[in-house]
Image (cartoon, rainbow, N blue to C red; front, side):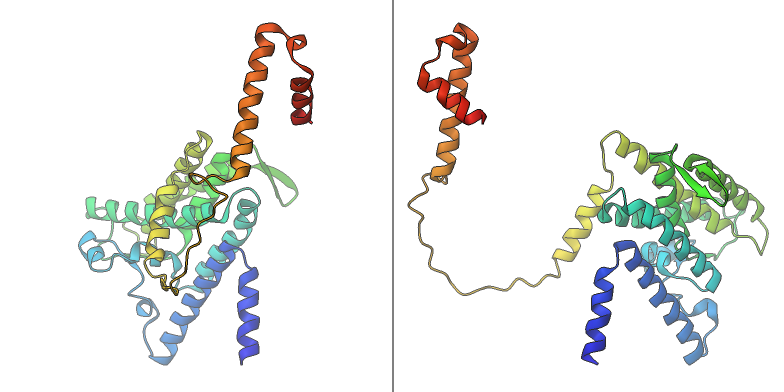
Length: 296
């Protein structure tokens, strides 16, 4: 049993961060499936405490749903295609950007999609069906995909027998989502809410990419909040009292190497200043030798 546990831990440690997100989605999906079989629950209620409600008043009672809905799926094909997209897009993304940025975009995309979904359903209750619920990783996956399309729009990807630029793919997906929003209105089989969430994730991905091109990473604030949250749960063990020995080689917090580097830099500045005023020939043999040694 221990060997199996260690083997699983080792394999999980080799996964990249988006593959780990796929594993979490898989665990949640399988858990929901087991609950429907063991407790004989309807499929639509097995993960009820994770899904995002359309009404803000209901959302206040379970604020965690703004994130957990992006790890929840009822339908197998919905789950399968979301994870397939995430796997292939993730490989492209992580070849260019950091794992932390991937996590930022995934979570922020999910939050943006969820907020747009609730905002539209609350603002236009006569247009969209009430008592709706949102689940699925689509908004988060859209955010990563549209980020890539906006950050390097001219990058080509192979599509069957021909190449397509990423911005073509991004525009096509957004157009399909817009069509999906309107075609799903007053249609019990439609998915207006899901398509609204897709558009929210797409907007986040586009804005993130454009800001990053300007040199601003808008995910840094979210990253700091997450780090601070997890640091609250880290145990701070107090070690035994230690006798501190004063390092006599340090003066004012600086050691001999620091002073030597400082003095060398000061000497270089003086020599360069002398060259600028009187020329290289004005240097002494010792100064020339020192400059040569430092330059080497």
